Length: 125
Image (cartoon, rainbow, N blue to C red; front, side):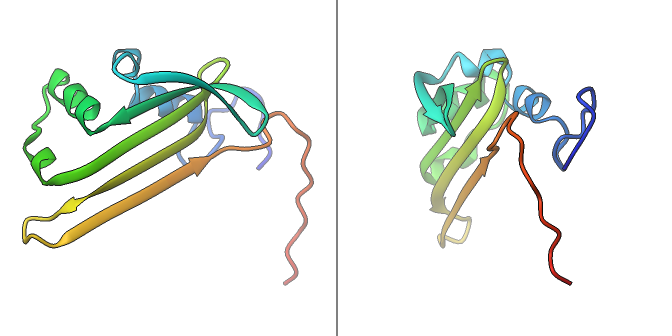
């Protein structure tokens, strides 16, 4: 999708940087385990959250953490490139629902080829 540099509609979710910073403001990022990692050739800062750190964030933000008791595993990893540009998200949650049934969710989101020329071919009708 080609856009003017000033537009905020870079993805269906809007500007990915705004999306990441609304979802993970600075005070939340401070609770993460921080490391450095390359993603798609870019140097990034990786923010890793486990169940305990996510529960602590929820408590700090005044949210109800009762449902955390039903969660067996929860991780969230976010990779930000220079300028706080999100290049990758990964989330994994598993546990039980109110009926005691096993539930789980894995989600991944990755932006690649940032500032690279790409060629998009029209699909064959």
